[in-house]
Structures are given as C-alpha cells and as structure tokens.
Image 1: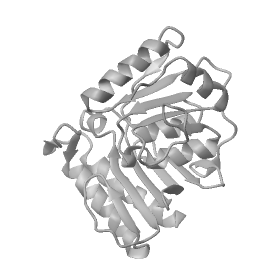
Image 2: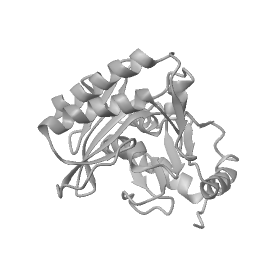
Image 3: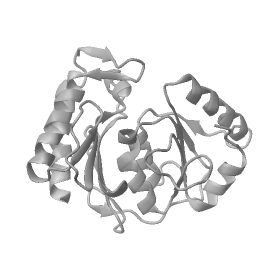
Length: 251
C-alpha cells in the first residue's frame, strides 16, 4: 500500500514539474478554484496507479467515480494549491489519502519541487523522506495559519474569528495549500491551522499527518472533526484550547 501511494505521488510529481511555468489552459470551477490540464493529467496518473492494485471508492477533485461499495476510499487532490502552482509560487503539493469508514488510514503529501515527501499511517507516526518526525516543538512564538473558503459565509465567519485572534497572535499566515500546511504543522513549521469551507480532498491527507503528530483536530466548536465538518481547527493540545477560547463560532 505505502509503495503504491508513493509511486503515484512521484509519478504525478513528474507531470507537475513538466507543466510548471508553462502556459496552460485554465478554467474557473464556478467560484471553487482553478483547474488546468496539469491537474487533470496528474489526477488520471494517480488513479491509474492506485486503482490498478486497489479498486476502492474514490473522492477526487477533478473526477466523479461511482460508488463500488468498498469500505475503503481514496481521497485525491492532484494539486492542492493550484492558484500558487499556476502563478509559479512553489507552495503546492500532491495529496493522497486512504480512508476506511470515514477515518484516515494512510496519507502521502508530496512537494515535487522541494522533493519533500510526507507519509503517515494510522498509529505509526509521520515521516519526511523516510525520517520519522519527533515531538512537536511548542516553544517558539505561535504561527497561526489560516485558509479561507470560497463562499461569502466562510469569509464572514473567518473575519469574525480573526478579529478575536489578531489582538493576541500577530503571526498570521495564509499560504494557499491546506494539505501542505497541515504537513508543515506536523513538522512544527507552523503551530495552528484554522480553516472554514475546505473540501475533504483539501485536508484528507493532512488530517492524518496532524493527528499522528499529536495535534488535536476538531471543528470550531471543539468537537472532534469528521468528514462532514466545514470548519477545522488543528493545533497541539496546549495551544488548541487557547485559540478556541478567544473566538466563538455562531454558525
């Protein structure tokens, strides 16, 4: 399983590097982001490799697949951070997750330009390029990472949350790739991830990375996150509670 997921990520990475910096045909997905031939070609490559060996259900950003009644499901985002990718901002990734009964079992996040591959498996921790991550570093000033969704509702709720957070935490970032940001959180490069309106394929792999690193993963109400939640708050336990207390969602 691990080898197949990594092979799929590396194969898609070659496609993304091939198209990176080139003029592409770009379409707007009705206010839900951008898509190009790089997204579609990478997704097709990923699924051809995965489904050849493991014919599970599929949730993918650029494709619709029929339900085959499997208890397992592949959750795929061929380019998480497409806008960054299309503007040649090197913060994007390939995100592949395996879920069983709506719970994450394994995940790969790959940044083909930096050649960093994050891998996590339920109960086995997180690795970067084969090296297992240690404990989260919580001794530095907190960097809060925020990703805003596409709807007016998400914008309003997000601004309300930030009004509470900013007086106490000034190190706010919006990097543009939820999956890679969650992987960075697992690697102690960021300290808290806050989003509203992400799709499952945006965060599916990163959720497992965060959980396996020891972070609390909840919705904005502090309830353990599930795949139907629109809101997401992820942080080490000692910071999670502090962030939760300074904003109250009313959705």
